[in-house]
Image 1: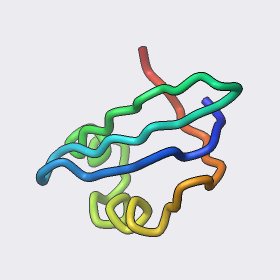
Image 2 (image 1 turned 30 degrees about the vertical axis):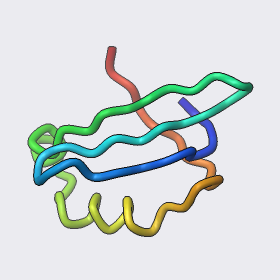
Image 3 (image 1 turned 90 degrees about the horizontal axis):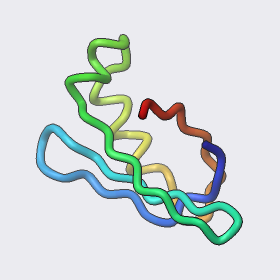
Length: 65
């Protein structure tokens, strides 16, 4: 999924949400920190990314349905 970041927020200590918009369609992605750790991504690095990312930034997310 490729699109512009509409909003991002960290919910508690284990979840993060990102709203991504492309061509007028909005998708909300949920990130579970426990799954990140299993893939080798450190929670601290992802939280830093969430704080650096700004509305309008173009991001690409790998999505599992």
